[in-house]
Amino acid sequence: MDNEISRIRLRKSIGKSVEFTLVVEIESGDTLASPPLPDITQVQKTTLQIAWLLQLPAPELAENPFDAANPGIRLGKPISSKRVRAYRALLVLLVCSLSLPFIYALWSGKLSALGIAVWSLSAIMAFVLIRYLYRTSAFWIVHDGVIRFERLSLMGTTEADTVGGDDVERIDVESGGRKGSHYVIAIRLRTGRKIRSPVLVGKDQARAVQAEIVRRLGLNPSGAG
Image (tube, rainbow, N blue to C red; front, side):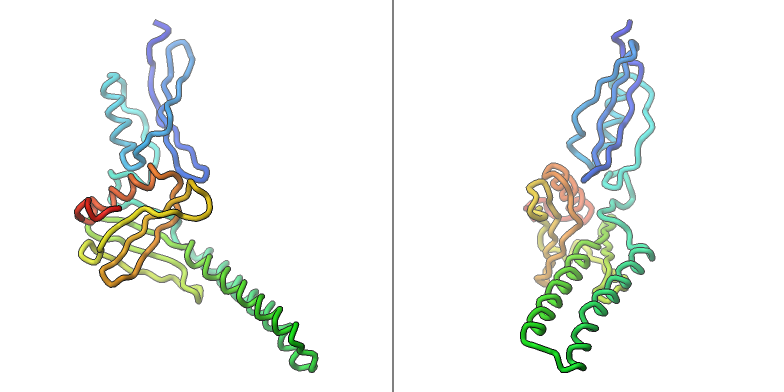
């Protein structure tokens, strides 16, 4: 029959966020697309279950960094040598652009109160920019029992640290910025330190990733907010 399902396939969309939809192909040639799968960590399991229920061959599974079937779920982008070089080049450019006019004005005796004020404002803006790049350079790998954190340091080197379940007091989902659709996973350690994840788009996606991190660290779900 023309309205029978011939096959299903998994479609991956990458924009501000990674999304997956199931595309159903009909014998007539028409296709139907599902809404985005709500639990980003269970994409592979959901897809295989639907294929089994419809008695169809299992479709090819797209790579999903958040999937619970992975040995490690990944948030953010790995710290590559290219990013390190670009960050260092930016630091050098900022230091030169701020220092040279100040040094010249000081050497020529033309340093004024206005010049000092402008230089100070520029230095503050540069510091804020560097801090922003530092905070947004995080890369997380969540394994069973431990999370590995990597980020660019303020000096342009790669920092790495690990946290186990015994170190964690609670895990929350928080706003990730001015955009209402942006969220982060915030891990509060027993030392009082807070670690914020790369941005996730959509509260459902953030909640699903939070639940998977809680499970992998062996924490009580009541410790998740």
